[in-house]
Length: 164
Image (cartoon, rainbow, N blue to C red):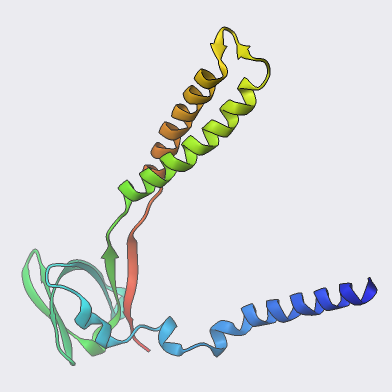
């Protein structure tokens, strides 16, 4: 038994060391996106450019070269030199409908379980059959789950390029 505890503790130690050192040993490009990734953006996509001096602006992407990025702002098209850019982020699409459907499924399943447990008190509760109680609680759980799923924020800004 003592040997098993030692093996488990040693395994957990290696697991935590692996987790702690993985960013340091990983590929640098994972943490710092490179300029070539800007070529994957499509024209008109909303981006955020942070320049030297912490000037930040939201604009629409137009094109990119090896030396600069071209964006469209309210004032017109603007070319920003690569040397002056600290970070470029793109806004990803939200998934509210998907999250609402997942939430509805989870909520309905949880509601069915809770409804079955509640209805299990007797053959019927307050004149309702076991199936009616389970179905009603399942429907309420599905509605609540769909609302929670739709409210959870998704998408957001993701760094495409970060100056090294």
